[in-house]
Each structure stands twice: as structure tokens, then as C-alpha cells.
Image (cartoon, rainbow, N blue to C red; front, top):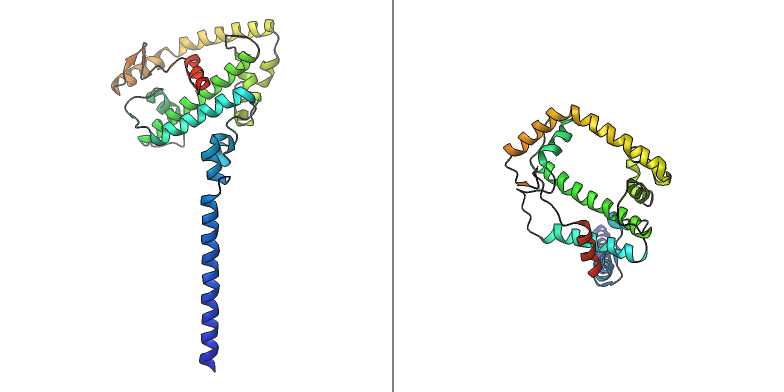
Length: 238
């Protein structure tokens, strides 16, 4: 009798396990073949249907400008995943990035790949912010980017809230006269800072030369990118 009960319990356990496996396999099959699933939708409709990390890449934009930003991010992701990257040349100088990283007292050592990743991240960040500022200037029928364009672009997405102390939102609504006086004050402050940064810049140039960076455009370690207008034209054609 005991053997019979044990056999029944064991058999029931096997059946329960089989049902669980069939359910999991069915879920995986539905996920793979559902064209509107998380991955299927992204593949069919591009980043416009993506969720998670990339669901806010075009936050604050609409219409044609939203399509431009989505095309830019799709190009960036495709390049990162599939292109062969040359790690000896970078868009931004690694010596300066290392110096900024070392400014943190908690940083004792820096791995070789950390500045490379930071350089790529900064390149993407600067390009996206420039594109958003360009979009704001285009909407106001202007061809010259102003500081107010950057401030206005930051307001359209909460991703840039961490920059509020660097570019206050009040600058987006400053009258032209006040903005002109502010630019003059900023220029004077920059000139004064340059006097104190002379030795630091010289040290930075020497570090860049020692690392073997290429000299182009008079700035060590900086590889000029295509002008922003050319990049925007490329995404518009797509």
C-alpha cells in the first residue's frame, strides 16, 4: 500500500513538472513568433517601439524631428554592435578624461578600457545634445546655435535634469539684452580662467603627445567628426 501511494505521488510530481515545462516552452514560442512582442516590434518598427532603456531617446520631440533622433540612435546602436572599432584613436582626448576621473578622491586606479568607454559616451552625449539644440534653433528659423537653444533643449527631456545646475532653465527665457550681457561676463570669466589654466593646459598637451595621439586641427587626440549639418542631412535622407 505504501509503495502504491509513493508511486502515485511520484507520478503526480512528474506530471506537474511536465505541465510546467510545456507552459514555459509555449511562452518562449509565443515570444519568438509574436511580431508585436518586445523584440519583434523593435525589429519591425525600429526604435520607435522600443521599451526599457531606449524608450525615451526621442522624449520631447515629435514628427519629423522625432524621426531624425530615432534614426540617429538606431545608427549609433548598429555601429556599436556591428562595426570594427579602432581603440587607438578617439573623438575626445583620453588624457583629459583620465584627469577628470582622477579628480575624484575615491578613484585610486583606472582600468585601460574605462576612459575609452567614457570617451564614446561623451561623444554620443555631445552629439545628441547638439542635435536637440539644432532642432530648437530650426523651429525658431535660426541657423546659429545659442546657449538658450541648449537650455531650451534640456527642458524637453527629464534625462537632462542633472544639468540644471550647469545650464539653469531660466536661461531659456532670458531677453536678448540680458543674454548678451551674460555672454560678455562669461567671456571675461573664461579669459580670466585661461590665465590660471596655462600650466595645466601645457601639462595636458604633453600627456597627449606622450600617449601618441594624432595631431589634427591643432588639438592632440581629437579626430574631427563630420559637421553637425552633414550628420543631420544624412539622417534626414534616411
